[in-house]
Amino acid sequence: MQWSNWSGKLTSQPTQQYFVRSEADAQAVVRRAVETGSSIRVAGAAHSHAPLVQHNGILVDAQGLSGVISSNRERCSAWVWAGTRIYAMGLPLREVGLALNNQGDIDQQAIAGATGTGTHGTGRTLQNLSAGVIGARLALADGSLTDASADNNPDLWQAARLHLGALGIVTRLHLQLRPAYLLQERSWTAPLAEVLAGSTHHAAENRHFEFFWYPQADQANAKCINESTAEPQYPLAAEGQRLAWSHEVLPNHRPHKHTEMEYSLPSKAGPACMRAIQQLLTSRFPEVRWPVEYRHLAADDVWLSTAYGRDTVTISVHQDVREDDEPYFRACEEIFLAHDGRPHWGKVNYLNGSQLESVHPRWADWWRVRNRVDPNGTFLNTYLRGLQ
Ligand SMILES: Cc1cc2nc3c(=O)[nH]c(=O)nc-3n(C[C@H](O)[C@H](O)[C@H](O)COP(=O)(O)OP(=O)(O)OC[C@H]3O[C@@H](n4cnc5c(N)ncnc54)[C@H](O)[C@@H]3O)c2cc1C
Image 1: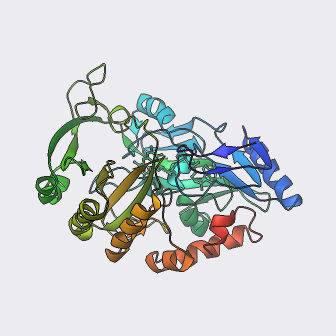
Image 2: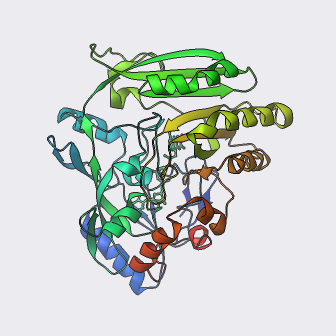
C-alpha cells in the first residue's frame, strides 16, 4: 500500500487504509485505532508539499464524505462534507445563490484539506479559506463526534479552523459564504519593476490582484479580477480573459508537477522582499525557470493562520519536481525570515517547532487544545510530533 502526494515527491506506506463514507464509519475507525494503539493521518486530495499526510500508520481517506449538506441563503452559509473537492461545491452553491468569498489558484483540494492548511487566493480585502470556517464537526480520539463553533467549544473551533489534520477526523464544515457573483479578468505582461511599482495601487483598486514573475525573461504576468454585471461568456476564455461565475474564473489549470515554498509577509514588506528574491535568482540561481508568485491576503484571527493579525503579501517560489529544490528554497527561506515571514502550512519549509512558535502568536494555544482533545497523539505523525 503506497501513498504519494500530488507532486510525487512525498511517499509513505500506510499499514492500513480506510475510505470512510459516513460519520459513524469515521468514528468507528478512530475507536479502533485508539484501542489498538495505532496512529491516524487523514488524507484530503494530497496537494500539500509539506509532510502532513506522510505516515506509516493508519491512513483515512475522507473524500467519501462529499457534497453540500444544507445551505442558508439569508445567512450566506452552508454545511458541507469535509471531503468535498472545492470544484464540486461551486455549482450546487451557485444554484442556491451562494459562493465562496475567494478561492485559491486551483480547486482540486478537499475543503477540509484546504482549510486545514490556511489555503488562500489573492485579494487585499479577502481572507483565507480557514477564516470562513464558522463551525466544524470532528470525530475525536475520545470516540465522540463533537461540534465546535464560536458559541460551542470555542477553543476547539479556533484550533479546528486551521487544524493540520491533528485534532481528529473533520467530518463536516460550516462555511461563511456570500451571494453568488460574476467575475471578469484582465491580464497584462510587463517587466517586474513596473508591475511591482504599481502593486499597492493595483491591490487597492481591484478585488483580486496577483502576478507571476518569470525570472529568465524578466516578465511578470499580472492579473486583476473584479465583479461584473455583464452576461457570462461561454465557452470560457483563456486564463486572464474570463467572464463568468466566481467558481469558474478563480481556479486555474496547473498540470506541471512542481514543488513550492510560500511565505506570508507583512504587506508593507512585500515589495522589498520580492526585490530581494529577484536579486537572489539573478545572482545565484539564474538556471531557475519557474515563476515567483505574488499575492495579497487580508488579516484574520485564525490561530495558526499565516495572516493572523496582519495584512499580508504572500510570495511563492517553485521548482521542477525533478530538480533538487533544497539549495534554492533554503536561500529563499533566509530572505523570507529576514522579512518577518510565516511559512504556508501546505508547502515546503525547513523550520523547527521553536522557530514556528516565534512567528505564530497563538502557537501555544493551538497545541494546548490539540493535546487536550488527543492526549496520546493518535493524530500526530513524525513531522508534527517533532514540532511540539
Ligand atoms: C498545484 C497546486 C496549487 C496550489 N494552489 C494553492 C493556492 O492557490 N493557495 C494556497 O494557499 N495553497 C495552494 N496549494 C496548497 C494546497 O491548497 C494545500 O496544501 C491544501 O492543504 C491541499 O488540500 P488537500 O485536500 O490536497 O489536502 P492534503 O494535502 O491531503 O491534506 C492537508 C492537511 O489536511 C488534513 N486533512 C485533510 N482532510 C481532512 C479531514 N477530513 N479531517 C482531518 N484532516 C484532514 C491532512 O491530514 C493534512 O494535514 C496548492 C497546491 C498545489 C499542488
